[in-house]
Length: 117
Picture 1 (cartoon, rainbow, N blue to C red):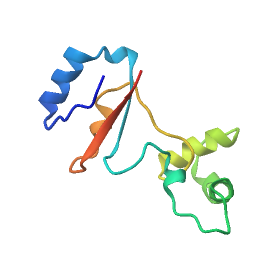
Picture 2 (picture 1 turned 90 degrees about the vertical axis):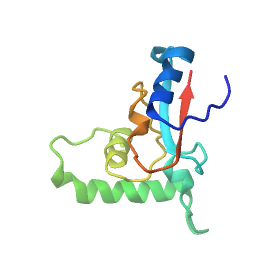
Picture 3 (picture 1 turned 30 degrees about the vertical axis):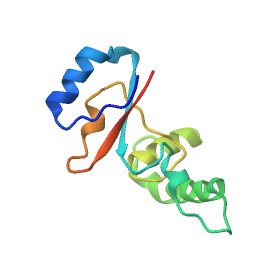
Picture 4 (picture 1 turned 120 degrees about the vertical axis):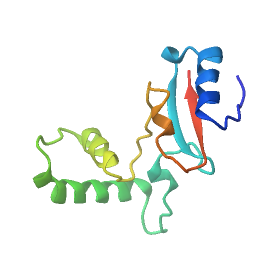
């Protein structure tokens, strides 16, 4: 499998129907210029902190400030990360989906769709 340059939704749907059994793949949409890394790894972090320390500070702030805004309290760090990431918090998590159309939900952004098999 190689790279495909697709410019239209019809072209993408045609590629999916002819080249891939999308039940066997996970999909991710992201800006073309980004490396395949989670948002936390793409942050510019000063020499005084590691990505893990930054993540812990962000999660601590989320727990402190966000707890009054949620219906059920996450039970562990990964649940807090998933909640935070859903609201734009940079985390070590990298979103993937089984829905081949979900990665296209950033109109106007030149992006790539990454497939994982």
